[in-house]
Amino acid sequence: MIKVFYRAGAIWRCDCWGKQQLPSRDTWVDLISPSADEVDQVQKSLSIEIPSLAEMQEIEASSRLYQEDGAYFMTATAVTSPEHDGLESSAITFILSEAYLITVRYMNPKPFDSFAARIMKPGSSYSTSTDLMIGLLETIIDRMADILEMHSAEVERISKAIFAANGHKGAPQVNLKETIKDIGIEGNHVSILRESLVSVSRMAIYLNQAVAQHPQVAAIRETLKEISRDLASLADHASFMSSKVNFILDATLGMISIEQNQIIKLFSVAAVVFLPPTLIASIYGMNFHSIPELSWPFGYPLAILLMIVSAILPYSYFKRKGWL
Image (cartoon, one colour):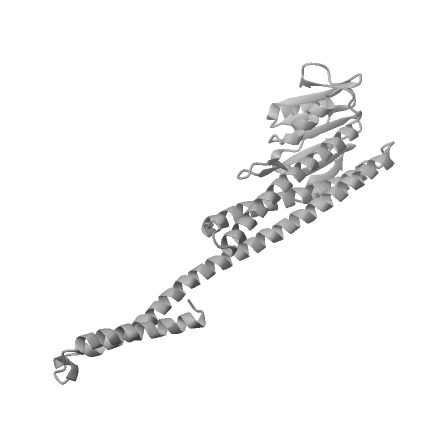
């Protein structure tokens, strides 16, 4: 599908591709999971080569940020879904020329719909393709900040649940093995966000070079400087969250090890406690006729008493030492 946003006086309008003649400038062409025929139509109409999905997914900087035929091609990895268990990212290409902004995407991030609704409201301040590019970039960053806040809150919830459950009496117990899965999910989410932030930061730096010939270059670069500061602060927060996820994972694994050691300790104590009674029972279980206690009427009660006392003594010792 191809959406075309164009200015009609002071108002932006949206039409599908081919419904009317494409304006000569100040136009946003949004390609959403385009077919080969749709890509070919845009290429012929605008005399520009649209990168394929395989080219968009390349990781080299030279393949993602370059200039060709007077247009600037910028590909960034953006977060496309904020759900707790379904956070994903996808490559999005922005093609900026003096007259047009072309976006190519194969998923539907929420910022695109939000920005499209914003520019079509009366009184919109966006007038050129560069304005659209910067406004769309700001919307994407705002959305990533919201998603980062949401997953930061989830990491904090997991952290509180782990340490509260294992640090206070009467607190609800947490299944640590299941918690490791939740930590792994959040670690993956933070990793996706960090990748997106780094990718968008590189694009913002390149965009700063691309607007060098713009008549309002000073104002635009001031805006881009603010965008870069926002991205840097978000990247720092994402790095902190990554470290926190690793800390929580180490703490959880340590608690699992402590629980396992506690079980092994109980078995070890039980073995030591029952070792003297077992020794006494083994002595009196030997088949020798010369054992004096065999004919003694109090031999059996004495053996039982010895076994009980020999079990109580090591248990009391362990208890006094605080090992139980």
